[in-house]
Amino acid sequence: MSDNHANLTAAADRGVAGVFAWVQPREITESAFRALCAAGAEPAEAREGGLAVLRAEVAARSGLALLEQLLAADWAQPVRAAATRSTGWGGLTVHELDCPNQPALRSALQLIDLAVSGSPTEVRVSRTTVAGIPQELWKDLILRRSADLQRTINVAISTAAGAEYLAIHNGGVISAADPPSASIAASVLPRMEGDNTVVVVLPGTAELEKLDATIAPKPLKVSEPEWLRMYQLSRTYLMADQ
Image (tube, rainbow, N blue to C red; front, side):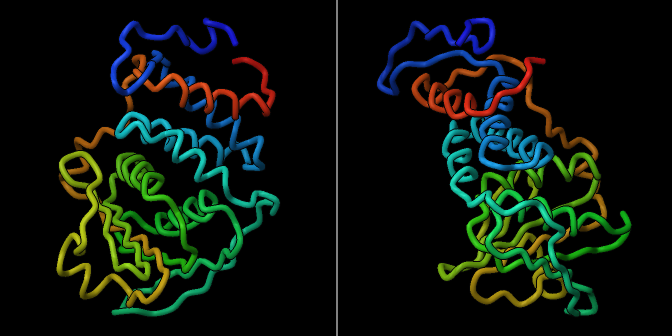
């Protein structure tokens, strides 16, 4: 491991949280990308996963935890087009995604792609019964896709413990026990029982005009042991330096 590659000089401060290192954001995304590719993810999937890992690290120092969740899946299945079907709900078409036994990262990407593939002016709903898609992954996907497409993206997650709703608020993603609006609950969200994840895409709003999903390219103070674990996971995938 070179100092040039990872910028792993330990910080001088040793507090109750342990030993820290200063790491460039691109090193985190690259290490997550390599580790996911080593597990069996396609490069496009691994890139999306790497960006989500970086955001989780920036937001809550939980990047390694998210990466380990994504890696824990069975990546043995090759990429295939997920089966879809359409059902009606409240005058809308719900696009159902049937993707059993595939990694959560792949399911999340397929589900959100299915939801955003319509016209910018239409309301679009997609749903899957696949469980275990990490919330930190959704937070990143909602932010980046909403900013890129200038569309409002909400995610509803139902489990045996109850329902949870993720939505954009004040430039970030918040989690709530109630839908972001009564109208969405009444006419857009299909009935959810058991494990369900629903993505609702609405036309853009004024709030999205200033939404910035980028992460500043400045060094991050991270737990050195956790960073070393992430870096070591990435070394099983060999890729030419860029």
